[in-house]
Every structure is written in C-alpha cells, then in structure tokens.
Length: 610
Image (cartoon, rainbow, N blue to C red):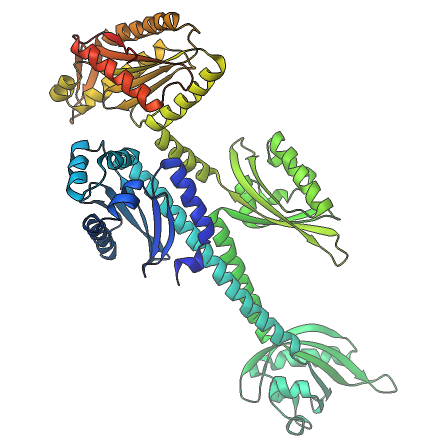
C-alpha cells in the first residue's frame, strides 16, 4: 500500500498549507519511491539561490541523502545542518508498523544566523549579496523544542489519518465480500422435502439436490436419517412426535450431513401432511442452507467490533435519526463522547438540548431544520457538555437521506471529539507567536501588532512609539551563575515591563536580553508624544534598575539567593501611520538604543530623523 491510497492527499496538503501559514515552516511529504505528495512554503533562499546554483544544490542533495539514510536505518527523528547553513528535519510516517513515507521540514535556523557566513557564501557563489541576505532574513528561526513539538504533532496526525484510511479501506473490502456473500445467499433455492412418518423420503426438489448433494433418484425411497448426524437422532424423534400431533415447527435451526459428509447448518419449517380424513401421514420440510449466512453473521459481528474499535481510536462516532418517529440510534462511541450512560437510552431531537451549550444547541437545531426541509448536509463545530460539567469540542457532519418521493426521512451522520486536536492547535499557535520562556509575543506577533497599530495610527492621526531595550550587565549574571539565573532575571524583567505599560500596548521579546515595547495612541502632536514616550521609557528604565533577588536551584536541588543589579539601555523611535516602514522603525529604535549604550548605558535615547 502507498500513503496516497490511505490518506486524502488534498486534505493533507491543506493541513500542510495551514501548518506553513501558522508556523512559517516549509513542508514536504515524499513516498518511499521519491514521489513528492505535498510541498508547501519553500523559502526564497533555497528556491532562488541554493537549489539553482550547481555547487549549493549539490549540498542540498547531500542533505536529502543524509536525512533519508538515517530514516532508512530506523531513526525516529533526524535533524541535519546543511552545509549551506540551513537546518533540515525529517520524520518517518509509519502506519500499522510499516514505513510508508517521510515528512520533511526545514529551510530554517535554530538560532540567529551569521550574517557574515552568508555574505561570504554570497561572494563565493556569485549571489547578489543584498537579495541573498534578504532571503536569509526571511527564513524562520525555531527552537529545537518548537521543532520537536511541531513534528510530533504532525507525525501523529498523519499516522491517525493513515490508520483511519486503512480501516476505511478494509471496511470497504469487507463490505464488498459481504455483498457477494449476500448475493449468493439470495440466489440459493430452498430444499422442499416430503417424507412419511417413518422417515421415508417421498419427494425431493432441485433445491434439495443443490443443498444436500443427492439427486432425486438417489434420495427418494431412502430414509431421512441419512441426512441426520448420530447426535441429532433424538432431536429428529422429538420433531416427528410434534408433527404427529399436528403441530407446526417454524424456523428450526439444526445441522445436517451432505452426501459428501460435510455438515451444514439448515433452517427448517415443518408442516404436517394430512390425508382426507385429517390424519397425519407425513411431513413437509422447507429447508434452507444457512451455513453461509451464519458465517456472514459472524463476519458482520466481527466487522461491527472492528468498526467500533476504529471509531474509538479516532474518537469518531455515528448516529441515525428517523424524522417521522423522532427516534435516534447511536454507536457505542457516541455514549463515550457525551459521557452518557447507555442505560439512559438515546435522546430524541428535543433531548439533544441537554448534550450541548445553549448556543451550540441553537446552531444544531437550525442545521437539522434546514437539512430536513431543504436536504442540505451540514458540518458544525459544537461544544458538548457532559453530565459532570466537562466541556468537549465536537465536529459533526449530517447527511439527509430521502425516500423515493424525494422527501427527507432520515439523517445519518458522524460525530468526532476534536478536543485534543484543538488543544494541540492552541499549543502550535502559542509556539508560533510567543516566546517559550517569557510567554511574551515573539517577532512574528510583534510585526503583526505593529502593522495593526500603524494602520490604527493612520486613521486616528495619533503618534505611536517603538522602544528597543537591551539589558545592561546581563551577560555577567549568565557567566557567573548559569543560564538558569539568567532565565529567572528575564522572567522578572518581563513582569516589570508589563507593569509599566497599558494592556493595549505590546511587550515583546526580540531575542536574548532584548525587548521591544510598542506604545500606541500617544498625542497628535509630535513634541507632546515625545514627552509622553520619554515618561514611559524613564518609568521602564527605573523599574528595571531595581535589584533582582533570585533564588537559583543547583543540580542537587539546593537553592542559593542571588542579588543582581541590571540596568537597561533604551532606544525610542516615533511613528505616525505608515509614514515609516516596520523595518526602518525597528532599525531606528535599535540605532538609538546603541547610542544610549555608547553614552554610558542606563539611558534613554530618541532617534532623530535623518
């Protein structure tokens, strides 16, 4: 089997595109034959430079080969530093224990890239230096923890999709086999046999020939006991006794022996044969070979068990609702999703209100009403409420079914518990837009908020300010007491920064000990705005200058109290609307910050327009 046979590649591509849009990471899914099934978001530095030049392309191929080699050797996860300076990652996609394909991401950095390295590389291979450095700057930066989280999520998702596809394929194959068996059963003819009370066979039709293997010439005149296993003789004597009393026996199941010795299951209906005087003189048997139908029933039972296990694995359940009777039926997984005791039964349409929040109930009823009146299928994300008050997120698809007149008589559908998926989405969103240590917005989210603030400034004509801040005397703390102490100081500095600004303002971690503060909605007058920004900046500077009391725990768990003094150098640049680009604004604030450092640190400097 190939991955493309088990997974909806279009849906997988859509997920990859969403993944790229959220994280900025490229994706590629390749089967083991090298066919590219999905590829999204490739970075300019690779498509316009590394994959174009023969020498750098050779390095790319070397990276691909090295990643594939490790996966072939059974590695569960492989990170490779390409000689072109980029980081590539590969993870195998394994379904039902079989390595089916590989998921790749890459063309990013695990830390701020060396501009000097890429400038030398531009000179070495004749790249336009400005365009090449610009492409480098557009490549994303991820931590190893972010990479592991994202890849772990996507691998699990691909695995679940593949296993659902495999289960679906096997179910279709089983259904096809069952349909074939059912067709054979429907085309079989019943055996019709007449016999005297002493068991002598008197009539034998073509159906009996087919079922028992004896021709009519071979059977008529011989005793019925030739079909009865020894252990069933007493059972037959009881049947003869009942027939002699004039009773009918309907749908009696037993076993019989064919001419070839094979034991078969039969379902019989037996009626007494009476003469003109009303005396019972024999029996008429209508026998049907149910051996195959019993096997089908066992197969159906097995398939039902497998379907229920599949539903349980995917947190996927099924339901049907009869419009006229207002009666619903649920698969077992439905009771688990809604936390409902099966002993309570299945609620009708009105009873569904107790399963969801009021808003979700209203949306469900509207969708069902439209489905019944117009025959329109529906897809909804609703919030379910379990009896213990726990809320679960559910994805629901409903399909109207019509009768011959075109009237909707039934709704069938699927319900999937997507609570964990939504939690994972939230985690990915957090990783994509926030710093993992301080939980502050990262560069990506800062740029988005800055864009919004500049647009709002265009409308209001109120100035805003961007402050670039670098902690003074931070490195000695790390060098002396380790990164744990540095991390504690950064967390404390974050809290002090947030206490100095409004909720509408943004404090972002730019990297290392650098922070950016965006202040919006200052005054319409530039001089007044400078005064306001200076007041805020001085407030921040003073807050950060206070002593830091840190409790650092060593590897043995022993805590040590550390007091550290750390000031801040700040650069400030004003903006009004989109008169200045984001890049220039950040650059100006950065320049002003370095002017503050050169002036002796622990100072605030404003950028003066060139």
